[in-house]
Structures are given as structure tokens and as C-alpha cells.
Image (cartoon, rainbow, N blue to C red; front, side, top):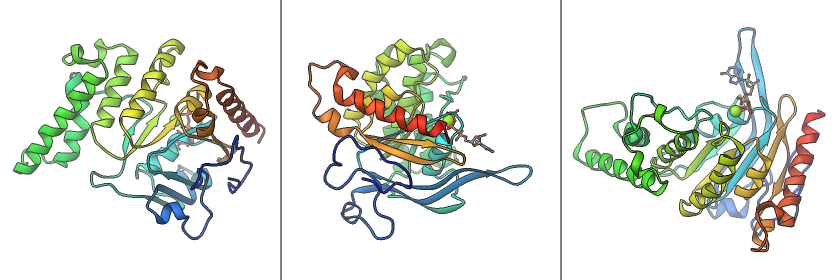
Length: 300
Ligand SMILES: Nc1ncnc2c1ncn2[C@@H]1O[C@H](COP(=O)(O)OP(=O)(O)OP(=O)(O)O)[C@@H](O)[C@H]1O
Ligand SMILES: [Mg+2]
């Protein structure tokens, strides 16, 4: 696993099929077998500005396997959210190619950096809102019978997620009546209710205090287990990244590139169950490797 444009750090040999980037040009065996969900090839991203254009990310080569959780870390402003915009299809690359294997339900479910709950809707209505809107396709009254049933199913799914997330007694509360942790759980229920195979989470616990974050992290690990999907998690918290993800990529520089990647799966797989979280040596080493890459990004 050494074909990123810059340094890569691997703690153990990549699992069969490779967890790192596929060789450019030609499909990897896993891709040919349909195992790759997302491809980014030589992708550059940026935004038009008043004077011209701001280049944010350059030459990003990345692939994600179906069912994998990838964490993306990097300094503030380096382009983590920009990368998610491209994966969600909200931002066209300046050059290169972004390819997401389509699922029947659409491309991605995106939990934005801000929870974006609608203040005038209660918890249940907020959680079912995105799935309902996707089904309505903007047409409020012209629902055919099949769609009406799908709408009911979406509401049921949102309700069941809220119950699963411990919010069954809060269905009729409004966002201003919720704690930060509850808001994040509602936002995640809304994201999962879309039923998509690719889930993009932008700093899902960013606004929470350290203790709440740490509690939610364990809860989040269980959610990821019970809702199989391809997950991309943007976070500033390296411990969170190595605890939740299979692989961590580090962005850095200006414009940013992938500085390297740390494969966490072997550390987790061989973790002594008696070890508590990061006291497991493998995860601690994975976190140290991510910090090393982040430090490299700072000196660029
Ligand atoms: N719509 C936009 N128009 C112009 N520039 C933008 C736009 N959105 C983001 N940028 C710029 O792109 C760069 C990357 O922003 P982005 O939000 O992707 O960073 P980030 O890594 O997610 O930061 P943070 O960790 O603070 O959330 C920043 O310099 C930002 O100013
Ligand atoms: Mg961001």
C-alpha cells in the first residue's frame, strides 16, 4: 500500500484485496469483482472566487470498498468538507473523475457539518424529512400509489431509527428543546432514513464536549455495525478516527493532497478484548501514525 502520491504509513500488511488506493489505470481485481463503491482518480477540486479560482484539493486518488469505513482527517480549511461535497455529487471536479457505484436509492446520504435541523419541525418530522423529500421529488401533492406507500415506509424507517437511538420519548420535541447529543442523533437518524449505501458524515460530533463525544463514539461504533454501508467520516479527533474507521487518510498542504493513509483494521482485528479503547497497542500506534502525518502536513 504505497501508491499514494506522497508518504503512506501502514501499520500492518493491507488485507487481501488491498485497502489502499488501486493502481492508476486499469481496474483492481476488487473493482472488477464489484467490491469498490467509490473511485476518485486524479481529482482536483476548488471554487470560483471573485478574482478567479481557489484550488482546494489536488490529485486525489482514492477508492473505497463497499462496507468500508474511511476516516478523513486534516487541518481546518484543508478541504475535508469539500471532498465530501464531491462524493455527494454537489461539487463537480475541476479535473479528474469521481465515480460512485449507484445504488437503487440514489448516491449518498450526507450529514452536513452543521446538523441543519429545521427549527419548525419536531424530532419525528425532522428525521423523516430528507427521505420524504427525496421521494416527493419536490412535488407535494402528486404522489402515485406506489410512492405513497414508499413515503409511509420512509416515515416508519425514521421512527424505528429514532427509537433505536433512544429518542422514543422525544418524538414531539423541537430542536431548541434538545441537547447537543440528541440533535446529533436526530440528524443521524435523518441521514440513515434515506436508506443509501454511501453515508457521508462531516464531523458528526464536532460541536459536542469531550465526554459526550466519547460516549457517542461507542454508540456510533454499534450503529455502524448494525447499519452496514460504506461510511466516510470527517473528523478532527484522531482517537475517534482510529476507533471508528477501517482506514484513515490524512489531507494536508495547500492545495491539499492525500499525505498518507493508516490502515487500522489489523490493529482492531487483533486487539486484546481486555484492552480498553486506545490502550490497545495497535490502535495507539495507529493514532501516533496519523499524528505523524498531520505534523508533516503542518510543515508543508
Ligand atoms: N463555497 C465556497 N466558495 C469559495 N471557497 C470555499 C467555499 N467553500 C469552502 N471554501 C474554501 O475551501 C477551503 C476548504 O474548505 P472546507 O470547508 O472544505 O475545509 P475543511 O477541511 O472542511 O475545514 P473545517 O475543518 O474547518 O471544517 C477553505 O479555504 C474555504 O475557505
Ligand atoms: Mg469542514
